[in-house]
Length: 583
Image 1: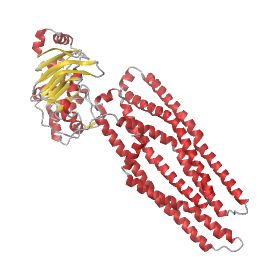
Image 2 (image 1 turned 30 degrees about the vertical axis):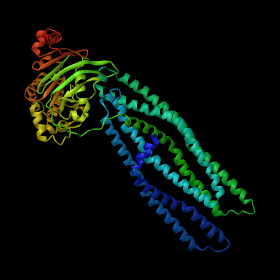
Image 3 (image 1 turned 30 degrees about the horizontal axis):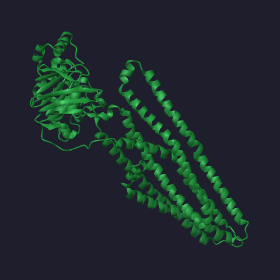
């Protein structure tokens, strides 16, 4: 379906508002365009015919009252028509933004790997705002202008069919200009919107990485890169501006002058003919209507640029909405027992560049399985597959015998919890970051989860307690506080399978001891996976999997692996010797 048809489809969802607004607009236009007709009647029937005698003001006063009354009616109808059309436009964009944001939630994590966050933000905010301008301003102006032009042509044909036919020349001129403008502007606008997205992405990245930028004194370099991008944006904006400046008002002025040339030529020739006498009222009406005709023409021409901006923005929005997503499922299943099995699993983020090769292992209910290995060995990839952030390339993963590839992603995750190395906190409070707005997580449950992980000791200095405000990313909290909130979040949802993705690598020893103590109690009855840098934290794991270049090269418990004297033993001795951690 073309972009235009899709935009019409959205408009049809609010057709009652639009149709009502257009009907009121039609009545408003009719009332407004009666003015020149009344003026013609006053001039021809009461002023021109009374030059040789006294003027009777009574019928003139009545006609003037009608003239004023029509002006009032026009104002009232235009007011309600404006409200209806603008409200419809706002509702259309409200629906589009909701659908776009909702669609983004269904896109797989893989989609965001190569797309900067700023570009996604630009689609939801800037591009939809441009589409809003299409409905609020462009379509509204086209509807008003189109209605007025139709009414004026009907009036002109009523007054004089020949002159009415002559004035129709403006329509092909407008159409040809619009086609030529679109042919040039479409390409330039695509580049402008793309550069705008790139700037948004760069700004977003710079804000998130401001600590690194300033620490390594890269401010001038970043400023130079942004200026270069902004200069490109300016260059294409200037190209578009030159075309608009040369053809908007200038084009209308040329057409207006041409119309008056035809008018004077036509009526001048008629006045020289003895068979045709042109009344003053008729001439006034024609001049008034033609003058009025160019107000909507100016309105239409001035909207060409905004129309093109909006259509390009709509193409970008619809291209995102056309990305293959998965419906968010509310299906619930009984709580897992927690038996997890990987069977001959292969996985590649790109083509056949496998980061996991023939991975097979089993984690039974209540067991703690640790994954260790150098950076790039595949530890986090295993967890990404278990959570179905990505799907396996070959093989299968089962939970309690159920193939997770046959279940919706939301259903799978309903009884799983995760704590990341760098926990993400949302703007809100400590409580909202633990409950995430889930009605099942009461205030008491939030407090219990915090107490269970020892959060009362680390968070006791916060004046607001669990109502303490949290800014985006929790930047006002220490790494230990953020980690404990993230840990309490996972526990509050009472997961059957718990994943700790290097959850203790960025916190101090005291906080680590608090978490370790809580884990000894809380992991009972849960299948727990731990990705660890500090091997000292996984000595009590039931099984340790040692990964190297995407393969399991060793497995066993801590004592068995030390006795084996392989990679694990070397890593452990290295850490024990210098207190460091592994990739």
